Length: 260
Ligand code: SIN
Ligand code: NI
Image (cartoon, protein in one colour):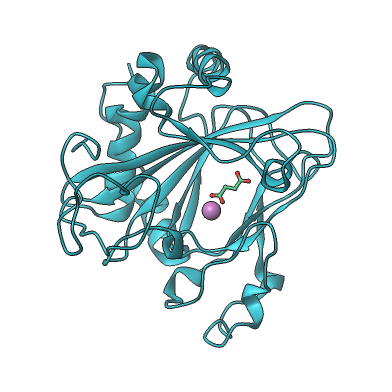
């Protein structure tokens, strides 16, 4: 049951804390994967509702990612997965959150034909948070490898702070930024996975996803979790714009529900 607690091996927790990411196989069963694929197919094409898609077919961003943020707000089936105890509990154990809140979910499809890689970046510079620590689960809904868009991570790069955000369409080389000297691109770990397996990564861990050179979409669902008590920085973001949050306010309320 998605509502049941999960107990992660200490080895996985230690690995995450040391390296800033970890792979957990089989976090969803084959039946759950099928169900989630169906929900995603229903929600991805929606042209109205509360979820947000950043670009349409033909756009430069679409070639990197066909994405939709906050699918849980439009689809009860998505909400069941996004709010699930099992996934939030795993995040809490890895990150060591006292309590966990949802920041947002993020359906991430890499479409076939003219697909571009997701360039090396950190996530936290895009998020309007004063504190570090927020992190993502990235659940593969297709088997993934270098051919169709699997991810890579730089171990220990979660220690690197205060870098600029990377424009995903016209990226600069994050490794050449002042302050990124500790990160070595030759240490990149390629994470090939089966559908239903996942990675968790810290908001500061450098990561990259290969282009999708297959002839089918590469489907993934990310969910971004933060510690209860995380405060709003005041920066613009699709999930906080027009919500009434003032700089310094805790990110809480119905749009950022407490999950654990
Ligand atoms: C991707 O799915 O291609 C990238 C995901 C991420 O940047 O977290
Ligand atoms: Ni990212």
